[in-house]
Image: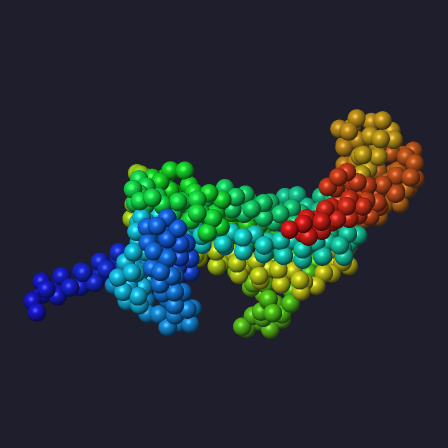
Length: 461
């Protein structure tokens, strides 16, 4: 064999690998078989193939599915993609009748349908796992609606809140994620099958029947758009990215809270590891991984957006690059939700350390200003500056403002020298937290009200 022949054979092999998608789109085998069975049923109902032919096709396809399920199917790169792999095996099993399954369709609408089925199925799966996570967070909130902790802005102590209220913040985030997945499912639940290559088909097909058989609301409206559209995949990638961002934010707080500087929580040994050389250390490896994997799914979203941004109508081979990122992001969020749910379920809370932290940073200072506005009829800005002097006095004494006696408070400035002793109840940390009774506020009363809202939502589906 000459060098040119060797090079030609090598290049052909490389090109086959470059062109083929079988090694990743084999993940769509169940959807491909489901779509082909539905298509064959429609063809039979329309008289395009016979009932006997349809029966042979369906039996053959179910046999292939069983082979793949049991690991007895060989995926060969020569098949190029999952559609040809299954069709070739079908023809091998049932003969020429198998060649009729592709009547009135193209690989363009076939892959668009398979991929959309996959996205829709996993949209529901991920949506439901979000609700499980919310239910765990609600359970934690219900046990800690009176557990004081410092609420922060700019990572600085701001005002006293309760830990249950803090958990409800994440419930609100993950509920929005649930709603996004729900909305995306409704928006994308339309069937591309029957669009053929790009312009429809001259065969007397019934796209409504196919849609019904596959669980879609109706057929898509434009064949050319249908075979080239990947908005449904982008919706899923975006929704996953936002959900992972929320997971990352909670993970960041778990990392902070489990440090010696906070010691608000302890994680199960199952989700934290000791250092290889420092036996006293317990590293929050799992939350760190959850935080790190967020960048991975962001990359998958940007990757597909970039693939799609310059494509003319209709189908282009570029869209072969649409699947691996989606498969990866689905797997990442799926396992992240499973793990985070169990991390939170097994989390140990340390209320005593949270309370101790509340006595640093003068969390009830704003309550002194609010007291003067309400009871002394002072403008807030004037009350604000008087409060600063009280804070300075507390710092001078090495105390938190909530720990000042009435004499110490009165001595902080002339404006407070005659202040009523009642003001001390306003500076009490628990009273401060419970004073915020507005809907969605941090008081125990408000927290319990919102817990019931989430409980009702969790059991509403």
